[in-house]
Structures are given as C-alpha cells and as structure tokens.
Amino acid sequence: MYALTGSTIVGGYLVYSWIGFWGLYFFYRAFVLAVPGGDRRRYGLMVFFLPSLLFWSSSIGKEAWMTFGLGIAAYGVARMLTYRRGGVPLLLLGLGAAMLVRPHVALVVFLGLFAAFILRPARKPSITSPIAKVGGLILLLLVGVFVLSQMENFFGTKKLDDTGVESVLNYTNQQSSEGGSEFAAEPVTGPLGFVQATMAVVFRPWPFEAHNLMAAIASLEGVLILGLFITSYRRLGALPRAMIKIPYVAFSVVFSLGFIFAFASIGNFGIMVRQRVQLLPFLLVILAMPYAIPRGKRTMGEHGDDTNDDDVLVGAPS
Image (cartoon, rainbow, N blue to C red; front, side, top):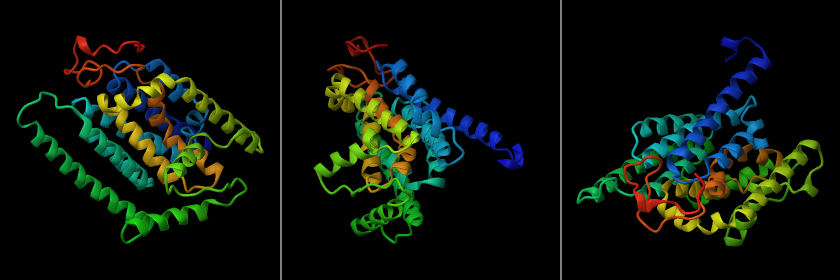
C-alpha cells in the first residue's frame, strides 16, 4: 500500500478507512436487499455510527480488511438468498478476503450461509426444486471442506475434531490472558456457559471494569447495545418466526452464535472489543428486523419475485 501512497500514516488511515467504509456499506445494502420490512434507517445509523464500528473499521490493521471482506460476503449472501445475479462471485470474493486473515471467521460465514440456504424457499416451486436444493447443498459442502482445510492450516492442527477444537480454544485463552486487560474467560461447554459467553463477547467490559478512557467508551457502548436489546423485546419475540421466513435473519443469527462460541475463549477486553467489530453488523440485524412476521409464505427480499399483497409486514417500519 505504501508503495502507492508513500510512507504516510495519514495516507494509510485514509486507505484503510475507505476500505472499511465500503465494507459497512455492503452490510447496509445486504440488509436492505434481504430483510423486507426491516428498519433500514435504524440499521444504517447503528452500522455506520456505532463507535467501535466507526473507529476500528477505520484503523490501520486487520479489522478494516475483515469489515471489507465480510461486508462483501454478506452482500453476496443477500443476493444469493433473494435469487439475484452476482451473489456467488461476491460471496467467494468476500470469503477469499477473510480467509487471507482469519479463515475461522470465514468458516462461521459458511455455517450461517448453509443454515440460511436450507431455509431459503424455492423461487418457483416445482418437482425439480428438491433436486436443485440438494445440488446447492453439495456445492456448499465442497466450499466448506476447503474453508475447513484452510482453518486447520491456519491453526496448525492435523484434524479439527473435538480434541483439535479444544486445543485451539485453550491456546487462544492462554495467549490472550495477558497485557493488563485480561479477564477470566471460559470456552463454551453448555447452555449456561453460552449465556456467559454472550455477555462477555457482546457487552463487556462493564463500566466498573473500565480503568481508562478507551475502556470506558467501550463499556458505555456495551451498555447501549444491551439497552437496545432490552427495548427491542418485540423484535426478539418475533425472532424464531423471522429466522424461518427471512433466510438472511437466520444467516445473521447462526453467524452470531458461531462467532460467540469461537471467541468466548478470548480473555482480554482489548482484543475482544476490537475483534467483535466482525460480529456487530450481523448482530444488529436482529435489532432492526421487522416487529411482526407474516404467516404467509416466506419472503424473498426487496422487490423480489416471491412477494405478494399477503406478505405485508404489519407494524414494521419501511
């Protein structure tokens, strides 16, 4: 990059912030395209102006690049789930960019896509629709095998089975539990552990755990996000139906759950606050999805061919 811009920190920040902005823009476009009836204004305000997304996606480092890659991948998924052209190349481009830096996050994207693809309704139901669905799942599995192999190479494990996953998580815990902002973190081992992991990955540090200005800002943002979840109880109540009716919501939820599981072993607030920038654009989908989900057939997205007058999302802002 410096070969083109010259050795300038300001120039580096301009390039990285430009890359990060386009990543956030693609997240926004994915939401508008694939979540019919969602509150696009609310999602846009959160994804563009939440302090950590505004700051870390503009910094010189991995987060700007990952925001860019994940944003392109999310937009590709949105186009695939709504039967638009160009979804597959965008998905592969975004996954490729993510695998260059963090192949384990690319694997979580694949898991979310696999779940959403299963729930995606046929564009025009016919006798061959199940065959096409199975063929698509087989292709996704092949992509998943490749991503998994890259992840094994990244972590230096011969086989990513239960033992391999446990060793990776334990190593991550040991490596991150230093530097002055460490805390006691435990890999997810059950339902209660998953609740604790969610609180740590999404909302912590709490204000009483902050010992400097940057930590205080991060803690206030965590409280803000927690408040948004509490006040969005109507949306949360509609989440199970939304995951079935709107495949992109299912994609975002599965990604969020997979990310929380994978990053629960990080025992350092500084690392956690920075790396959860990869999670927030997916998690915020839940806070901006429709209040009510129709009981009719599943929707295809903005201006999709599979919508009709019965698919009006009652009570949802445009």
